[in-house]
Length: 592
Image (cartoon, rainbow, N blue to C red; front, side, top):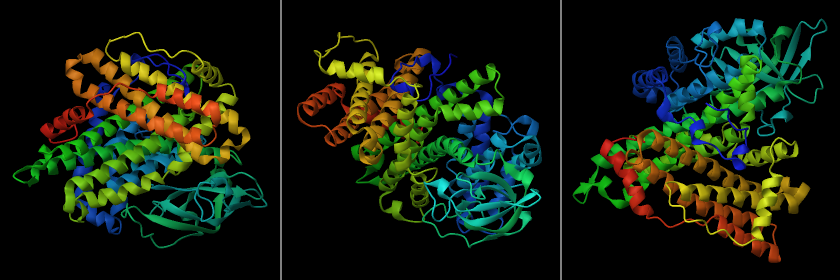
């Protein structure tokens, strides 16, 4: 497989569908790992959801221990430390397969992700040898202590302090952390603090047995009620000097890179949760009868099921495209001589833009899916005795976790522009070409009727729309652009739709190449509905952005350009969406 494009390069470069991974290509070993996760949820988690939500003493830690015995906690951990050493895309598949596990999925992800990965990626040999094997088995449970009462999105403003002893043998930690998932039972705390008067955070591996650690009672939360969420206080907690994680003042970089990983892995978890909710809704719609027929036979319900399925299919497609791109970049760096764990980290860092996109799209897709799930259930959807109640409440945190969606939208554009300023992405050239095109006679196409010719043209134009809008915003607003958050979020929404739409087109192209057009008709339908609707969303976001800073003749010209770049041929979305829905209704589950 050819090397992946650079992160963010999707906006200005074409991708060959042969170079993307699609979920139809999972191997038998990966499918078995996913099935093991699903079997574990069915046997250990789903029968105990009420007990979990009541935080029955010792239940969640015991479930993590059982998961460790099956190897579910060590998927990403290298084999030398007792893990599977799986590639990044496989780890995403495990996140998907456990994502429907409600509070258990949150505790699992906190342990295997933000709790374990800082040690795996930044720990020295002794730290890895000491902690990773026991984290892989579940003998030790981990949590991540970054957020403080006064520092959420602005993580580096934290006040927790670490003072080195006179003999430099230990640090004394003092401070307060909040919203700490797994805090109530964790044995290992990855803690971020500033050493003395440093400007930037450092990171520490803190064992509960060191003393000086106290916990507030469990937080009462809207959802994910079964996950332990505590405030953690460090009062003269003495940490051995050898437990400094990474370099002094390197903690902020650790936090950012671990959050990049957390963002895309959260998207994996939302995918698993969304598939489960869609299946539950389809089963209920087939069973529930009104006016003498199953409600699945009514157009209004088919619309909901079809749109749910299209968005979930889109999320899955974009997620594993990005996961494979991370793996390809990692392999490239390893081939150039870089240490494998460092290369893995650099791979994720390279695709931080896409990780932010996926975090937003995944969390908002799940929110849409559970909201429509409640609606399909009708009155039963509002009942705590039916499954949508828990799914609806548990979903809401995902737009806040791992950086709010607003922060991630702004990061998407900020990272793209910073890479352009560093010369890593040539956005200026393509943006200038689009500006010249606005002054020329429109290209009405050559009448190409080949399969996907229309979608390829739409995609090129969508990219021109965002290059025109973002290029003009940078030129007009200059240094004040960072303060115009609404404009930045408009541009980000355009980028999100472009990345997801392109991912869908690439997947469907590859599927057709492998199976033929007839066998892929429903997937072509899903992709075409997404493109049709994305054109309107990109148009609206672009208009809102341009109205914020463009005036006069220049504004009129750009509005005409935006209209041209978001023009798509009409399709019968009713019938197209119905065909997608009917496949799920016939199969009685999510099956795309």
